Length: 95
Image (cartoon, rainbow, N blue to C red; front, side):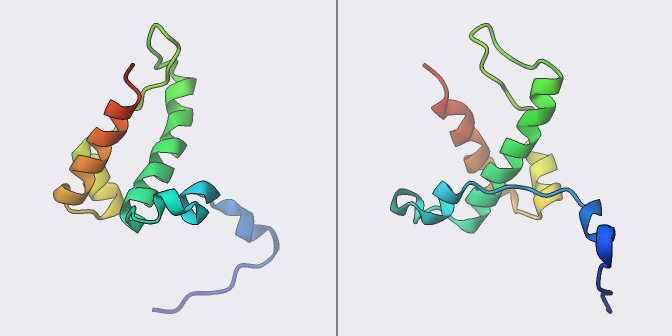
């Protein structure tokens, strides 16, 4: 497979997923897998869709709808990698 170079403004045609530096540089997150960090970044990206659709609870906390089978397909994870990570994130925001 051959990939061509992007010229000029062609390089701006893609959207990007942002990974918070904190996840990469803070020793507290050193033991998190790259898959978990990538999933977190994708969930942050999808949060903008949630805000756009006004998917918030009565305390104005944004929630994200992203089925585990979609995560598996979109990121190429096995269901074992996607399942626990997605459940942990939803539980950590509860008061």
